[in-house]
Length: 589
Image 1 (cartoon, one colour):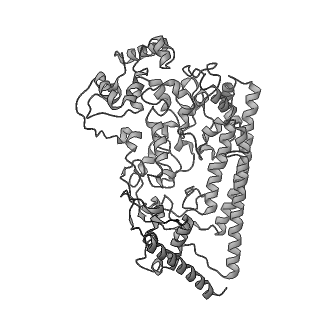
Image 2: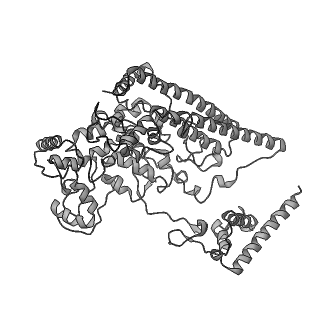
Image 3: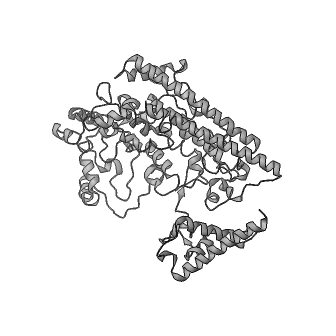
């Protein structure tokens, strides 16, 4: 079709959109339509006006913003998003950066947190800003907080902290377990500390000066619970021990995006490393509660780690739903005590708080391949078979676990086939766009995401790279999660299973075919295609951390610490999973 006809068509559409807009303005403001336009029609009008407007030309030194044009369409002024005004589809508002607090770790020079971090990492961030003054005893705290925060007081009164030597009736009433065992534990703590503890009151965890109150961390619990805290602090890479200090402060998905986007990373990881009430919630701190699966569900679910979904669709999970109301959760997680295994029964055997000790082999959430049944891992495998034999025969357990190995093995053949296609597109230079046409990754580099010094991610990448990340993280890893939790349906047909891998492999092949066809057509037509600028810049894209990186803004001394393991890091030159860098595997006892 001749070029002038195409332009004429565009002009006609633009005029029609503008006429519609003028009629609407004349009859009534947009917000008062008798018959409102559909969302698609309104957005199409905005798009047409943008196309027609000479002010949006990239050559214009002071182009109109999208908000400016949307303001004309909707008859609503451009304003800041924090005013409390209602912005139609949010099209005329401008982003206002929240209040941040300074980060810590190797990227503290530019890493930020929301102020809510003070509750998740209280040792480093908690600030006591209440107005009450005075030094108070526990009974005085209880008197005031019965009015101010009554649920907290009710929970505390139902806890072993308030009932260090409960009667048999109270132990049953508050679901505390064996009253004699509780009294003996209290006596052991008193002997170890050299103090009497008729109750563990408010001051023991928060202090008694209202102007100097603190929020508890695991260190607060350590004097009375040394065995539990020792277990909690003895894990390696990928454990609760380093969930925040390493797997958040050093991890690209958290460091590379806006703090308000990755609050979920900070919350779960900080709570489980820094505090004890993530599993047995305040102010009951009930061990029976932590033995139920719900204690783990808060963090261990969702697209990138579907442990809860896999467990609840396994036979264990189905029986859990049937038995949760009748099983006695006050009994310790020991052989013969529970008919149905919840998470803690297998992963915190005999109450051991080093959850990693009873895991399989850490493999970055299942994104790395390893044969857990190989002879070099025999001790781990035999330990799992022993646990399975609480309910199952030796041969049954052995066959089930070997089936897990074989399923994982097959899943990685699909991933490698997909990765081969994706890398091939990169080597041909046909990814749309190529890394140099994107915003810089969080390292400040323009490196292909699947290369050793790249940043595997699902944003600020080409479509084929995004599909690749989801294939390994959201699909291949979930095959492992499904198989390991005996979620047989999901391992094949359902969430994250083998058949979903098939679907995504087809998507990757289809995208690669499209890229190759486009390249062939462009070469034949002599078209020198340049990716649009929107791949590199935009209202959101310009906020990414890669743009903020500066020479020397990483604290390389952090990576010389030997008290913690470290993740792969291009800034520090650390490779993936080198034992002397990451620490040694925690061995089963």
